[in-house]
Length: 586
Image (cartoon, rainbow, N blue to C red; front, side, top):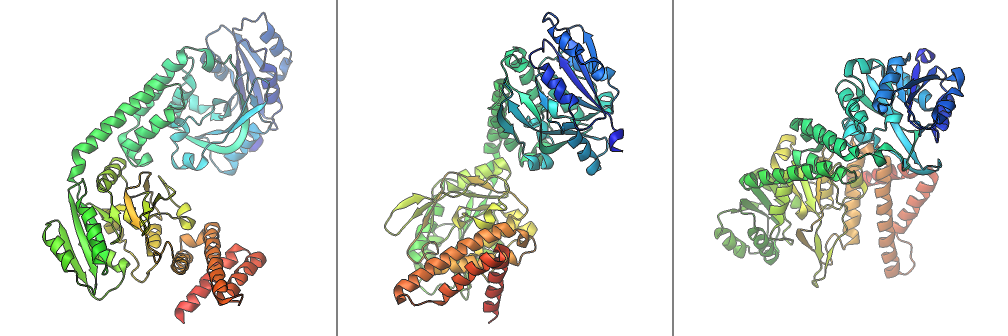
């Protein structure tokens, strides 16, 4: 079956004596032998140099001469003469790797792709002397998930394609009126009926030099701006939202992509559309109600400070739910503040069951379209809700978080270097989740529809387990601007090694007991490594306190290191999990 498939390699050439011999040789040297090499001389005017080189190959190639009309006309002429089942384009100044055609034919057959797909690949950029400048490696998974982005992100190199001959009958030929965008216009038409499949392998060398049409033709900008504006306008709004979550995201990311291209007119066009999307959201976003949930246990003065920061929000369509988790102190001052504000509600929970349960009570009582969490000792900056809500609506996000400022009990401030993720946070959040609860805002209906709640049995690390639960199959919107002040004292989890150990145990247990996450062996091993380092630090503190006497933690840490060296990280992680489980049962 394999050798029955014939491939026609078409080489259009105009005044190509400088590089065409290398191109032809690379075509003839293909490891796949059922090919024909068609060279089309597009009316070269170089005193017969191109003609002489082409004729020197004799019957090794099929050689045609035509009146000059541009690369589109030469390609179309070659297509009319081809006898192969598949079309493969090779510019006279570019090169094929020896296995280009064979790799693509094998890919078709090995994956049972049939003749309803078009293949393309990664490629090298080379200079005028054939020296590799860079490797153009395309984002394979993105192209799999969003096939249109093969085109909309400019990933297709025409010399890397393998196209069924039938595609030209169904979709037409190269537009002969165009000199610079004829290839992408045809790919666009073919994409409506064929699936473009990316092969993540370097199969061609694309040469960069000063005499290329893309470097010399004044039509590059004109045709390019026309083409990119056309395909943006013709992308349905529904599909834009499917691809990027919102029309705003689609347009703003298109504008960002176009920054790296010559097509500034289309870039500015996208930027204008982005501004219009922002104006639309400004007109309606005030209709969305935000529920701010503040769980508390005692610490009356700190609660008053947190409540005040919520009341001082520039965004006014809010309700504040104060969840009293069985406080034993006199909360009279809090009740007084509540009585002075109609949008503040006090909910009493008895007995004390922890922050996770209190937040769940708040979620169930909330009536807002969005929910924001605020810990009782932390503060929102005045524009926190307004800025975060606007971005969420603009980008149609279910979950968002921001950077934050940490302040210690001496008033020292620092913005933590948190990883800000826009998109899929997994697997990063498995081993490095820097999300602070008071920075989070969630669409309430998303929680309701999926029956998402905190695990009330967890005390430390419960927040990370909750983020991992709600983000298992969703994206997150991250914001660089710090909009929350997180206060810490010496006993805060961030400063307590003992609490950190408990937190990491909690997260490791959750991950290893979750059917989805338990398969992320590498990421869980990274987290286990952090856990081991913290245990070592704690053991060192104990050794300092007790002299050099060996502690249980030291022996345990040695056991961890021994297991890692002997059995590997996966076995180590499972050993930690089993020990945690046994200890809890006991």
